[in-house]
Image (cartoon, rainbow, N blue to C red; front, side, top):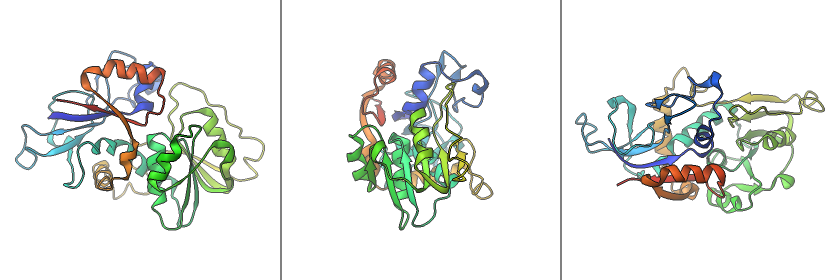
Length: 292
C-alpha cells in the first residue's frame, strides 16, 4: 500500500498523545496494526486511504481504505482493505472511520421517524451523526455546540444549530459526543420523558460527574453507551464490521461531509501538528494528512 491521505481522529489521537489511555484499556484501545505499546512510544491511527501497489489482481491499482496508522507505505493482508466506490474521491474517504462510528451509534440509539433529536457536540463525529439523522424522514435534528462557527457546518449538513443555552428541551433522543463533562450534563437536561441519552464520547481516564438524582428517575431516562469495536446488537446477526465499513464508504458519495475537512498538513509535519492540535484545537474537525 502507498498512502495518499490519512486523517487525525482528533479526540482519540490527542488523548493517546497526552498519555491518557487508562491502563485497564490498553488492549481494547489497540489500533489495528499499531506499533508499540501504551502509554508510549506507539505508532497509532486508524484512518488511511491509499493505492494498492502490489496485491491480488482484483485490488492491484485500486484505491482503498485501511484501518492503519499514519505511514507512507505498508503491507497488510488483502482482507484488511476496503475498495473505494468509484464515485468516492480518496480525499473524502478519510471520513469513513468516523462515519462508521456514527452509523453504529445511530443503530444503538434506534431513532424513529419524526423524532426530535439533539446532538450535543459538533466535532467530526457529532456532525456526522447529525447529518445521518437529518436524512431520516420527519426528524428534526439540532446540533449543539459552544463554538458558534459550527453553525455554518450545521447549515452545510442540512440540520439545525443552537448554543447550549438556547437548545430545545424535551428531545425524543439525545446523542452526546462533545467529550466534555458539561456536554454530558446538558444531554441529560435536554431529554424528554422516557427518552434515550446515548453516550458516544470516550473520556479515557477522566471521571465524569452526572446528576443522576433530581428528575433523572422521574423522567425515566435511559443512559446508554455506544462503541464502534462491536457492531450494534440490533444489527450484529446480519452485519459484519466489513459490511458496516462498506456502507460508510458508499454514503460518502454525497459531498456534504466535505464541510468537515477543516485543514490539512503534510505527513512530514505530523509530529508538530499533533502537538498543536493537542494544545489548541481551535476550529479543527477532520484534519487531513497528505502524502507524496
